[in-house]
Image 1: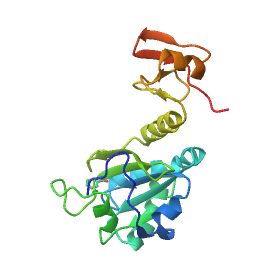
Image 2 (image 1 turned 90 degrees about the vertical axis):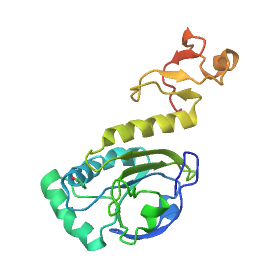
Image 3 (image 1 turned 120 degrees about the vertical axis):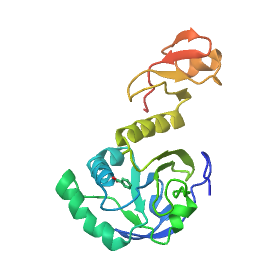
Image 4 (image 1 turned 180 degrees about the vertical axis):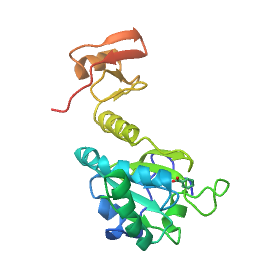
Length: 212
Ligand code: BEZ
C-alpha cells in the first residue's frame, strides 16, 4: 500500500513493548512519528534507537509521540534494549511494535521486496494531530537516519500549520521564513505588520512569526 501526503495514516492495533496499542487512540491529539528499522541486534539500528531515546525530550517538547517498529518479536525487542542502553547510553523509552506478522509493515508499505523481502526499510512517517500524513521518508538499511532532521521538519510542519509561511532550504527554528505565494501583499500587510523583505515578487522574507 502507498500512503501519500495528506492521506489519513492507517489505523491499527499492535503488540508493543509498552502493551497493546490502538494507534489512533494512542496518538490522541498529539503529533506522531512512526518509524521502522530493519532488524533487532544490528549495528546501525542500535545507534538509531539510542539516538531516538536521547532525543525523546525534544519530541516531548513538540508534543510528538514516537513509536518504532520492526518485524522482530516482542522478546527480541526486550532483550535488545539492554544492548542499546549499554552501548548508546540510552535505553528505548518509547514503544516498539513487534510486527512479526508484518501487518503494520504491509499497511504502511515498509517492506520493499527488491531491497529485502524479510526486513523493513528505514521508513519514517510524521502524522499530524488530524491523523493525516505530513511527511514520509525512506532510507536503505545501510544508512542511519538523522533524527535532528526529523525534529527540524517537525518544527517547520508545526510552524507552517499555524502561519501562512513556508521554510527555506536548511532553515532552522528561529530563522527567517518565506511568505507563501497565495498571500497577496495586501493580505500580508495584515498578517505581517512588522513588514518583510521582497527579493522577488514571489520571494518575500519575513522574521519567523511567534505564537502568542
Ligand atoms: C544495521 O542496522 O546495521 C543493518 C540492518 C540490516 C541490514 C544492514 C545493516
